Every structure is written in structure tokens, then in C-alpha cells.
Length: 247
Length: 305
Ligand SMILES: Nc1ncnc2c1ncn2[C@@H]1O[C@H](COP(=O)(O)OP(=O)(O)O)[C@@H](O)[C@H]1O
Ligand SMILES: [Mg+2]
Image: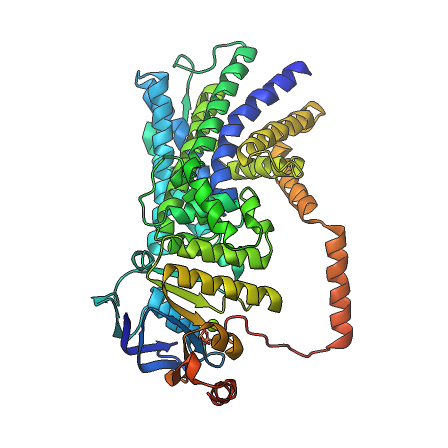
């Protein structure tokens, strides 16, 4: 359970173009897949930044499973909170190979030493993880990640983010940079991964139809507030589109 | 001719150590580190101080590695604690090291005639010893970059967001990189001092250009050879670079013009690497089309939202 209470976040404080993004924002997330919709600039990415710790809030609290993580540094939160970004290159190291990237993700949470990073006995496990994507990537362990397609890179980023079973998975328009076909494929893979690992997932998307198809719960944000908050089964596409347009 | 070649080879091997060091900051971390201009003479002076005080060659070399690592640590601390840009951090460190270097021996030039040295006399033997040192350093570095710390350093240069997402502090790996880099550069300075038989306060000046030239030349010649490791490229680059310089001197270039030639080599090689005729033509066409169609019209696509 993730509880956000009285969250406040302003940008450009003490300047002419101050943005009062969140004044008193409250929401709870549970172990399901929540899609966050809302117009450009309504604060979706900022919300994820506040949850991951990439940005600090001005006031309010964030509790994860009862623990107050509001003041916790990003890199300490990252043990529990994984994130996939819109840009497929942000979740991977492009100049390293697929295998090396997976080994890096596999090492998350352990202290780094002068021992070898890539462990031969883990390769079968990596290959199995890639095989589950059904993208033929299990044969590309020694390819440079920079040479993969955007969809493959984003799928790899997903596998890397979820390998250590984080409590929360944050997705920030992670299919927006992909073409429609690839985008749908990556969405399907996302849902499979979420189901397999049983993760609380908060997915920002600009596409109401994708939200309806893949998420359990849909939240529409508007001017720093929750405008709509429903289960995906309880809303018609037309209704959601209306809510989205008027937000 | 042969002696010119051998001298260039010897110098190239000494500068290979420098290039291996700068490779870490320039190529891997993308951190333009000017403090090497301070750590190169620092290595020479620390070595000179130790051996003129009667200690052994190996202690002298160790001392140079340590003072180099310390120089890297200073730059990294200025950069990460005060959030000062890499270039300025490096300039501050090299200025600081200028005074430190003068303090070490209380003079700006220390002759090294009867002190312990790697160089046994015959240039062929010297080259062999240097080649073994360079090879050992290269293998050590390659092994390091297969380690957990090494990969984190590579990833830091590649994508800091990823490293932070793995729960690591990117500054740690930048610090490690800067320390190793400057340690190698200082070692190169100590070896150079033995080679020319003195340590001098100005021996670091524009050494960064030599290092960059080596790395860029290595990359240019090995552009198509993807299997060749960056460390090998840096070494080849330093060797080729010194050969070019040696040939220029042999053909009558005045030694005083050497620095200008160094800078020109870097400029020419960077220009050559950047010059991509088809890409250039594409951009030129796009420019023409834009000018003709949308005169003054701004398109405001905001990628941040
Ligand atoms: N670092 C920042 N500094 C100042 N303003 C920012 C910053 N980040 C975002 N903003 C502003 O805050 C608002 C919300 O941004 P964001 O959270 O990225 O929205 P969304 O992801 O919903 O499109 C926008 O008006 C944006 O311009
Ligand atoms: Mg956004």
C-alpha cells in the first residue's frame, strides 16, 4: 500500500511564473495496475518523481507499507521502486551488451566489488527472462543495446526494472516513443510482467484506450487533483474519453 | 631514421600510459578532465622527491600513483560537492597542483642523473620494459572493467539515470574513475621524468592535447574494428601519434612548432571523424527546405511535458 497525504509541490517558487502543481494531493495505491491519465502538464511525471524520490515535495507525506519514505533519498528508495521512462535509452546502458545490462540489473541492491559482474551460471536465467518476451531477444545476449530497436530496448528496460521484484513499478508513458504496433506489444509484455511479479504498478499514459484495456484502475488528474478514480471495468470508453477531454 | 623510430616508439609507450588514463575520463565518463596537466608533473615531482631522498624506484613509482589518485580525488570533490562544472573543477585543481608541485622539492626543476630509473641504457631494452609495463596496465584495466565496480563506472558514463535507478551513487564511480585516471597520468609523468632525466614544472603543459590526440587517432584508425578494446585503441593512438610527431621532426619541423602541430592534429582528426558527407548533405537540404517553406514560423513542440 502506498499512501500519499497532503502532498504539495510548487515549481519556480518566488518567481513570476510560479506553478502551483499540487496543493493538497491525496491518493492511495494498492497492488494493482493503476493508469494515470490527464492533460499535458497536469503533473503526472512530477507525481512519479515525488514517489521515486527524484524530486522532493514541499510538504505532505508518502508512506510505503506503513513506512514513511518522504525524506528517503532516491537511491535508497530504488530498492523498492523501479521506474521505466518514456525514452527507451533511459532504462538501459546503450554502449553495453544485453547480457551486461541484465547482469547490472541483477546486481541491484548488492554491494559492488572488484569481483566479476557477469556470472556464467546466471546466463540461463537471463535467457529465460528474455524468452518470455517472445521478441527473439534470447539470441541477442551479446548485441549492443544501442543497436536494438526502441521496442526491444524498452522491453529490456522492463525486464531489468522488474528483475529484482520491486514493490512498485512506475511507468511514465513508456510506450509513447514507440510506433503503435510495438507500443501495444510492449503493453502486453508489461501486463504479463506485472501479473507474474504481482507488483503495484502506476502507469502514466496518454492513451485512454490502453488504460481501459490493460489497467485495473483508472485515475484522471486535473489541475493537481484527482478528477476521476474508477475501476477499469466500471467505466465505458465514452465516459472515460469525456472525463479525459474535460480534465 | 631507425633511431628516430625507436625514440618515437619509446615516447609513444610512455604516452600510452597517459592515454590509458585520460581514456577513462574522456571516453568512458565523458568528463573533460584538465587536472591531468597538474597530475602529470605531480607524478614526476613525487617520484623525484622519493628517489632523491634515497628510496627505491618502486617506491617512487608508487608515490607517483598515489599523488595522481589524490589529484583526481580533489577534482572529483570540487565537482561533486560544490557542483562546479568539470572544466572549471579541473582548472582549479591544476592551478592548485602547480603550487603543490613547486613545494614538493622546493624547486621548479629537479635533475635525475644518478637516481634509480627504469631505463637501463640500451633503447631496445627500454622499449621492452615499457612495453611490458603498458601491457600489464592494459590487462589490469581490462580486468577492472569486467568487475562490478568497473561496469558501474562504464554505466555511469553511459546513463546516470540507470545507475541511480540501481541504487548506486554516480559520484562514487566518477570519483573512482578520476582517481584511477590521474594515477595513471602521474605514473606516466614519473616515467617521462626518468626518460628525460629531470622533473620540470612545465612538463604537464598542454599534455591534455597529447592525450586527446592519442585517443582520437586511435579511434579514427580503428573506426571499423569494433572488436578492438578502447584500451588498445588508446595505446595504438599514442604510438601512431608519436610516430607522426617524430616523422614531422625528422622532416625538419622546428621543435618549437610541435605544440601547434599537436593542436592541429586533434582538430584535423576530430573534423575528419565528424565529417559525414551524406549527413551533411541531408542537413543542408533540410535547411534549404525549411527556409523556403516555413519562413519565421516557430513550431513549439515541448518534449519536457
Ligand atoms: N523541473 C521543473 N521546473 C519547473 N517547472 C517544471 C519542472 N518540471 C515540470 N515542470 C512544470 O510542471 C508542470 C507539470 O509537469 P509534468 O509533471 O511533467 O506534467 P505531465 O507529465 O503531466 O505532462 C508543467 O507545467 C511543467 O512545465
Ligand atoms: Mg510527463
